[in-house]
Length: 159
Image 1 (spheres, helix red, strand yellow):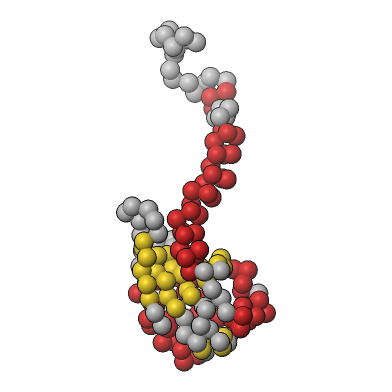
Image 2: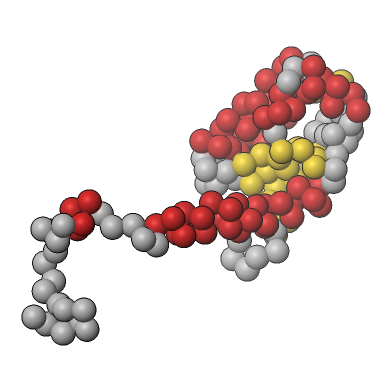
């Protein structure tokens, strides 16, 4: 199980931790892996990528481990992404329908880069339409002028 901490391309940004998962992710290995990864998922706003390229065996304990790590990361305002998922692991994730809960990337590099680009792209889709919809917004209390405390005319001069 290998760990790499990679900066995600922005100055003063939090590192992205890439963790290679063991070949067998069963009850015994899941406990051991959780002990290794626990300091990372318990950090403030963790950014984790789990590399599943070597995983040949994934059972219910392994799936539970993935879900647990994701839940803890998200509670700490972070995220967990999966990368390079082996065909064996992909089949189990699909059968259990947990593949829908994770962002899955072809390579670890793509997963690491996604931390850099996710927020600005997400903000572009959500913030700008919101700003445009609020351009003509006038609070109900201001519509009739009853709550207005500034007595300026249209030219901005004090009345």
